[in-house]
Image (cartoon, rainbow, N blue to C red):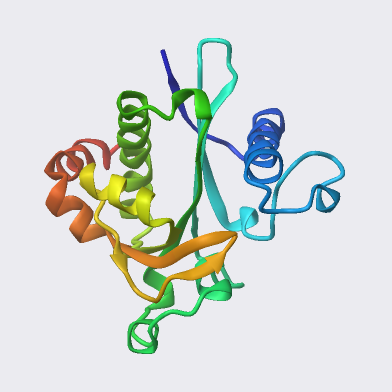
Length: 199
């Protein structure tokens, strides 16, 4: 049984569990970053200040998955700052409507199709409400081709906006339009209409 949480920044204990989980994935498992960069075992960066964090816990309150939504960032966005985006697309960005969904990680014990689908679908509902609430019209992301294909199967249809590049590993810079997310997931728009009064 999973518990899905939109994390409050003042909940430092839970935030640290997220950062510790990210360290385990990025430093121990994927070897993206040198462990020496994080002597405290907490993987966090300058974008977390401008992000909403989401976490999935199991019945033991261990972290199963994480993701974050960055928006209103005065320092830009990870994909924008570290990858080359097609110039004609980047020129069209309205910074007031732009965000980024990143640090999408699922514990390897749950990387089967059934659990992954449940986790991703439930997280995207939470993220979608914040996209709508904060008028984020499109969200950047840096995605591996295999994960990009999987998300598209789930109705999360990112558009590739640059060539394949090395960013941790081989990834494409991508863009997810909130309107396209609604188009392929009409239940989300219904959810927004039901929930927006309470948000």
